Amino acid sequence: MTLPLALSQNVVNLVYVVAAIGLILGIKGLSHPTTARRGNILAAIGMTLAVVFTFAAPGMGHYWLIAVGIAAGSVIGAVAARKVKMTAMPQMVALFNGVGGGAAALIAAAEFHDLAPLSGAVPGDTLAASMFSALIGSVSFSGSMIAFAKLQELLSGRPFTFPGQNVVNAGVFGAALVFAVVASATEAGIWMVLLLVVALVFGVALVLPIGGADMPVVISSLNAFTGLAAASAGFVLGNNALIIGGTLVGASGTLLTLMMGKAMNRSVANVFFGAFGAAPSGGGAAATVSAEGQTVREISPDDLAVMLGYARLVMIVPGYGLAVAQAQHAVRELADLLEAKGVQVKYAIHPVAGRMPGHMNVLLAEANVPYPQLLDMEDANPEFPRTDVALVIGANDVTNPAARSNPESPLYGMPILDVDKAANVVVLKRSMNPGFAGIDNELYFNPKCAMLFGDAKASLERLIAAVKAL
Ligand code: NAP
Image (tube, rainbow, N blue to C red):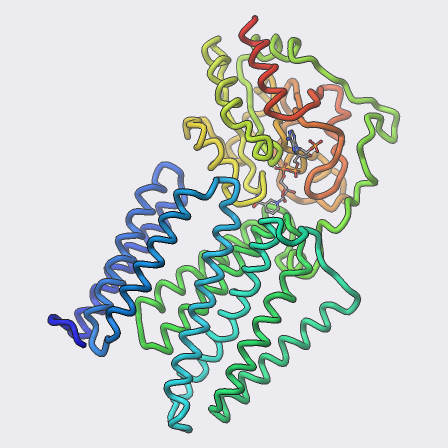
């Protein structure tokens, strides 16, 4: 069956250029909260144009089958986007990313299956692109499924390691490369099947040794893999939209991975092969007396309410603990109360605060915190010397001064929020336990710093009651 209005390839390519502009402007828009919604819509329009006009491209067929696939995918996507909680977003991204990689691998396998019986007839560039898509797409699929299972706590978040692991993994990857070469040389389907199976095993082996807390970096890397697999599937099919779209995903995923690595002061190789997060390296912490005999100072909600009520500028520093406690609405309520008393309230957002890129922005946006109050690290740090109270809520590593001063610390070199430059620092957390990096925080022994122990939401509720009673 052909469509009544099949268009020439030139017209379709022209529309693909328009679609590509939509995707590029969309990604640009997503780089800021105020333009993100518009960016999303532009990208969606670009993608819709690309899909619709692909139907009218010469040589298309199986329209009903494709329509059923699109309908099923759209329903699943729409329901998932509405139902999935904000805290479960990383898992959903992992899942969707994985099926993208799997689809690219299947396209490569299907094209190989179609062309290979004409042995010797598959052009070299198609063969190379098919092998690349099959390999990278499969790795992305199985790796993303393991990342999903870790984030969903179906698997332990602890790194799964054994001696000689990197050598074994390199062997599995080497075997996949050999199968790709033999499949290209012989054009026999069995080698393609072996390539797919071994690449799937490699994806599992690659992600298992990585700690649950590093999963966001892993997912953005796998996202880049999926983009590259899709782009090379575009070469296999001769589809320009797929090449452009895949390349954009590949490039943005790579940039995000590098930016996150930089903000954590860790190389991507360290994330993949370092089994970070295996055990706390800070000596167990939990002590309220430092090695030098300094003790931490506690503060009551009533005293903190007075301190905040008389402040001119309060800088709220949210972290992972705020997300766990789901305390974003309580924070907003506290800020509203303080603003009503004439206190200026701002939020300092570290790029890797929380467990996924943009975690804090998303949480605070959910509680309707106005965007202009959210300061990036570069804008927040110059504000700390004139801040009366830095209120750190469930954040730890991103405030640790050892990152500036202690070359021995694993955090050394990571850019941090300079909360210790504020006149007063108050930290809301449950105990003296370390954060993700497993490192003690010397900030807590600073004479300017006081602790309000307890669950972030419960502490904020006590604080709100105390501010109301002022
Ligand atoms: P963090 O260093 O992990 O510290 C979070 C703190 O929250 C903990 O010390 C914990 O102390 C406290 N906490 C946990 N549950 C709480 C609750 N219910 N109420 C109050 N406090 C609670 O978090 P962060 O400062 O946000 O730093 C993020 C870390 O994650 C960095 O090391 C970063 O490199 C890493 N990371 C981030 C990303 C990303 O994309 N954002 C990706 C990968 C890794 P208690 O147990 O004492 O309460």
